[in-house]
Amino acid sequence: MTSFAKKYAAGQYAEVWREMDQNWASFSESIAFEQGSHWQRSFTVDREDAEDVLRQTFERVAHNSDLLIQRLRETGYRFECESGRYGPPVSPRQSAVDQVALCKASLEADFGDLYVFDKDLSPFPLALERFGQIVGTLDLV
Image (cartoon, rainbow, N blue to C red; front, top):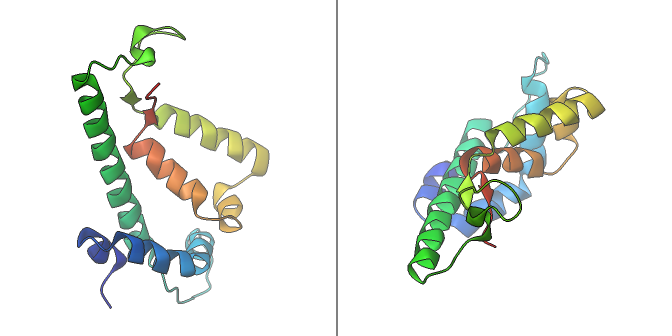
């Protein structure tokens, strides 16, 4: 079977996400087992493969965001975030690694171990973390 990441790299974006979505429960469950359980289970979505798809997805988002920012600037568009109107002037797209770390610390304080918290949810927490790490924040106002 071709990996999801290889299919994604070949441009089969919608198909990959559809297949991963159909099998996400087994992937999400594998996170908990990976954290030290002695049980052996077979999962239809490989963690490394799925994380590679997330990386590729958000690298595309970052690239396309940068392209959009560049094209908006070329039209004379002025970003409010660069004017400092609501705080110190910042780039429309910047790193969010610190914000992701603060969010994770807050979740751990409220819910305990994150892998236990994550396994009962949709893929959103892991995807959100990867978005913050790769794309960062994005303000096009």
